[in-house]
Image (cartoon, rainbow, N blue to C red; front, side):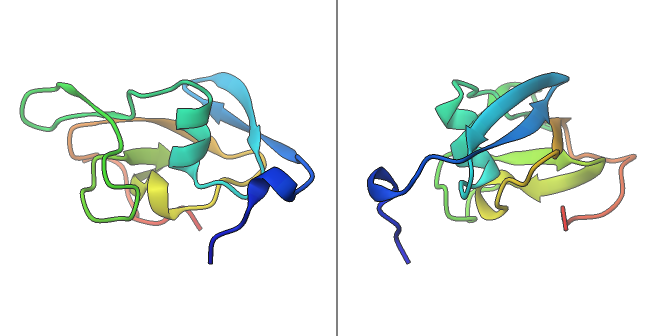
Length: 103
């Protein structure tokens, strides 16, 4: 369901992206929170190493893959941001890291 955030009290959480602490609105996906904070480079392509950004925001394109708390291949658009998450860019296919979920 859609939530009209303009009528909700603004609560924030703190996450770390690439070692920098960010305050983002509570209830947002990782992708939405990072985009709102001005971050557009989420990962590097496995083939060309070109920077990639979220595209579909609904879990179809896999352009938003990040590493969350040491776990690779997390779809940032599908995971709600939580207090204290450590998020970093994913380079390539995330090999060398294990897991596929941030929970």
